[in-house]
Length: 416
Image 1 (tube, rainbow, N blue to C red):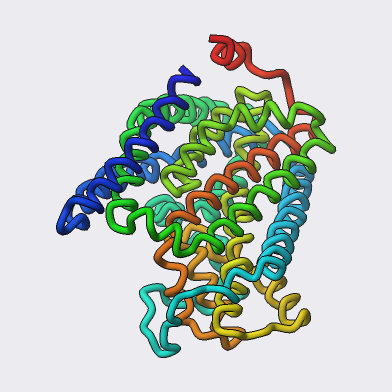
Image 2 (cartoon, rainbow, N blue to C red):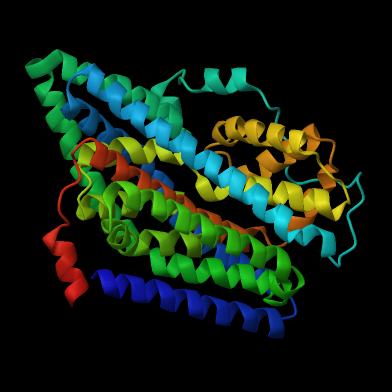
């Protein structure tokens, strides 16, 4: 099943590109057809959003409850956040170094948007106080309804610790939550059957409206960013090798399906259920995977953070604005905070970039330069987010002594 799923995803990507380019070339108004294709993608993403909140709640509560003592939760949380901070700094620094070295904005042969041009993406205020207040949900039901992953994580951690503290009296509750987790994982399998159709539709819609020629226009920018992502993958894998050894290579192979899914749909959220499943098959204990992965979706979006520094400095280069290293350091620290605060916001990277441009008095209209190719770049950064969170979960599991052997069922999939 594993190899067939990967084959179907790859086939859907190729067909999507071919059909999209045909529509762009031969149809008078390809946007109409693209709208119908986008409907299929939207339906798939809605299905994903439908299952993520209860899946995160059920798996995380189960994991926390089985951890037992509050001290164990704090220890795992501290290790996880420590890894996330290091990975965030690495991503931001590498993006900053690569865009400075390659300088793709300096040779951009396109007319620059007027500084007064209106943006579809509005910058959000950079407010640490509001972010901290937003961590705690006013209502768990409201958090579930809004798919506020970070708020769901906070509630689930408290709920799981309470279940563990109550002990045997809470056993019926724990059994019910464990049953919910099993049901949600089975439901995830049903939703994933629709993934190849969504992949085909997503690429068809994008290529139909933009055409593949846009990739040539922005070739240096896109090529430089994907080169940077490749280096980030190597560094993340290298960091993982220090802790889990050669198994990091197997890990990358095991998570190829969610990585492909995130890449082709340009949504790391779409890959969450499959990533959790593959991590458990790899040997990461359920309680560690269920704890680290949801936190990673708020605190460890490595690809998105790299894009923030890369795109912001690209726009500055295009306008001929030179930032001092002091300003770049300030930008790095600023993005360390704001990239966390924007978790769960649609097109979050663009919102963060718009806010950063405003802070450093770079024309916000420069965001229009990257909107045309943002989807193609979002594909790469979404896949990178999955890689970063997968390695983080495996490393934390190793630290906790909860990285077991690879599931025989997965090895069997690979053998056939």
